[in-house]
Length: 271
Image (cartoon, rainbow, N blue to C red; front, top):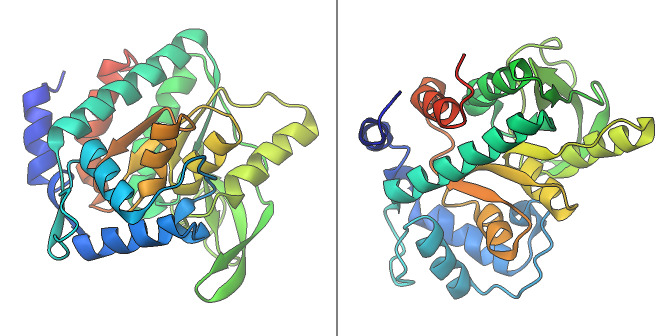
């Protein structure tokens, strides 16, 4: 098993934690937009509390380890690796509990170019443990507002992980997909399950709108989030999101492999 010390060293070396590629400017912009309830950063969450920019800085300092000084406005953001490790333990424990019950699980990502392998291995391990890994609504169209206007995307699965593709993108099952923060894909998936009378997921695993959109609808959700994604940490603070793990969500895909091994071992899902 990968030791905690070895994983901590990897988090820092790969810049998954410590000084990360996300800038302080990007994070502060997201906090301002979240405070204004901009749907581009609320990710499907409808916060119960009022959150000012200063409140969000304090929350993110507590959850991620970023600077709590609002006068700190430039440079790379920082994630405390100890907070990442604590989040991964909680994340793995939730996976292990669902696996022990052989519960139904849904995986979805708005970061398919980076995180598809991470979620894919977790989904395969849960399936091997007897869980029902859900893959409904394949091919369904979802209209998502982007900076270029409203665009239509298609729901698809790469392995057992949901994602969206632009029309005309590579065929079903391939690893390419579109980057999105939208909660509309997970809503479409859950609507499809309700329409066909299939089981709803006991747990949704993913990022961005997949986590916040599910959590807002009362379905347990866990996921990964960067310092410019305050919605997941607000959801965790308010109780809509079970676990939000702070780490850089856009490094090279192979840098997540040690995290995958650690989570699977912690969850007793290693094959």
